[in-house]
Length: 289
Ligand code: NAP
Image (cartoon, rainbow, N blue to C red):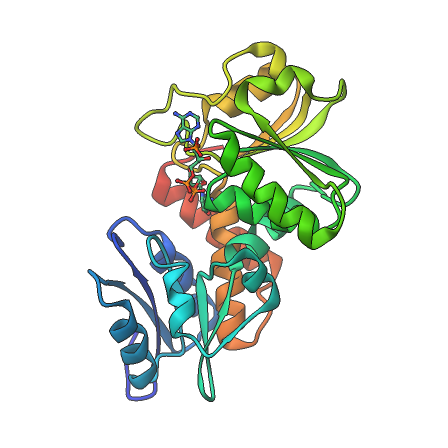
């Protein structure tokens, strides 16, 4: 693209940022849509406040925020979207009159990715593995879209209990049931949607899986792994071996980017273009299926 005096700038703030896929998503969208907008990663070593204030002063249109700043950045924004507020973390900042407004497109992107695969949450019983930042956001999403029950299994049960207490307090019902990782035998005897939101199986530890017992996988009709490196985790393989459908997290990454781009530009990106960008991302990652 040709940069000129009117070119708008968006960027990514995080540490590290070297391996990000976001420039592929946003610069390809700008190219395909003929938008005069460029996207640049910014490594922020420590002074997040100076980075966010500086970006606003430099007239940036928007930012993505990644690890480790998704919570800390709440201190430096003017406004926050209600769902992002409930989650307590933002990954997208949109320029407004008096400062940036924060959104969480990680989670709305996951919802859109699941919808694109025909996976719904309303009325579903969900097994949620892990109780870190990602799992907490998924639990909020399950509450927002009226899941029936969320069985939250984590190695450190106290963390699962904390999330359950918080979400159940907000929903005023026993939506989230906290359980230890070894307690899966107590799950109801039916097939369920399982969202794998732990970091077990992430490259380079690709042969690790959070629960080894094949009997566990008999309870899953659909397995959604938030991990996308690798694109075929052992969790996904075990789900498929037991007759379930399995998905990786690359579409979640795609749609968090699409939703951020839509917020920055106040547009809707057509499905065909989303699919084109997804193919580009798969190409970057060497995924063939
Ligand atoms: P996090 O806050 O560090 O949480 C990690 C979770 O994994 C915790 O529940 C932890 O259990 C569990 N865990 C780690 N090692 C374990 C082990 N050896 N055995 C059992 N459990 C273990 O991480 P996060 O930010 O929530 O991210 C979780 C995953 O989601 C990561 O793989 C990340 O790549 C993925 N993610 C994907 C996208 C996407 O766009 N596709 C976006 C965000 C995140 P304890 O509580 O017991 O430590």
